[in-house]
Image (cartoon, rainbow, N blue to C red; front, side, top):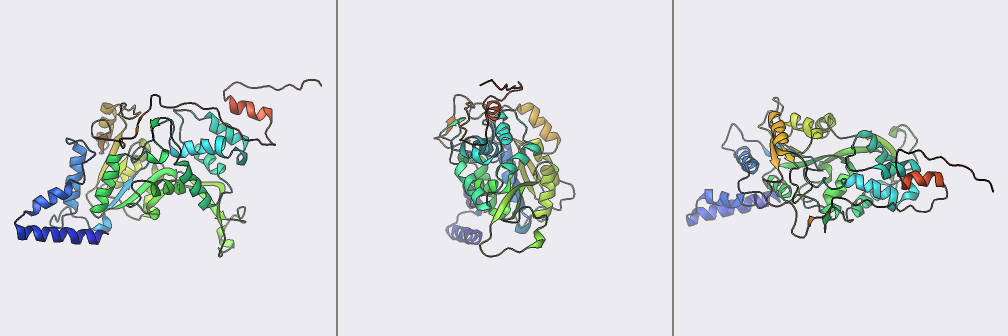
Length: 387
């Protein structure tokens, strides 16, 4: 696809020379494909264009980067797609799975954990371990299918938005622009890997990011029937075998783990990095490390738009912090000319608490259900009444 595009551009340039049209005008027209959803005066957009122009120009001996070394890494939640509604994709998926879709498959403890998650929760490793437990026994294909189906559900935070519809138009445009200029795109997410693949494969960036370029948090996977065997070395996969989630947990892809995963799975430093939070800073720093042999830049998306979005970050505070770290901040309020398609708009309220639907479960007792339905710090005491 890239080679065909390059040949077409060359043909256009050659034709322009015959007709007396300057090459600079052709390049200018090419650049118009990036900027549709960015503010006309956006400094980060201008900086990105200038960076791409110099590293893709073979005549710029000091800055030119070969295509094989043009690696761009993107965090997903909050960088490419919305995470400022009630809670983001993988957390809402866990809540829905435990309380509404398949409560009969999970323990009462996991139901209570799902019911207790409220805005402001911490998406730490302990919560991710509970996510892994919830999907134990599912094949990888079943899990991916569930993650895909969940994306079709609507969030209450926006009008007409399914969970899979939350990609920021300016960032989608940026991904395509980089791809068209010979960059290999990786999504480096704190969300579990199979879930991230399902999200990406059903998103506007699906043509620019292949499944093997998705790196995320890892849950343990083993061959069905051998879930309790400690080593995968003791048996061999055969035709028709299934790979299943055991409920075990491998690693959360946040903070320093992002740099470690990049080193392990890509094997070289990226030259562009995009994130939106402190958990991305290791990825940023690994990219712009002074030992990177190529010109490198890092950008941070700041959620400061509370008109079209639910952003609550302070621009002055966050932009100052990021600039001090060597990153270029991107303001959703001022740099994004448009965030979502026309049919999507911010709802009147950010979230609506719902009563969980608990499926019948013969092992569930009244003592189990009351804390689930009314999660609180109050302790419940049950007294056996006389017949």
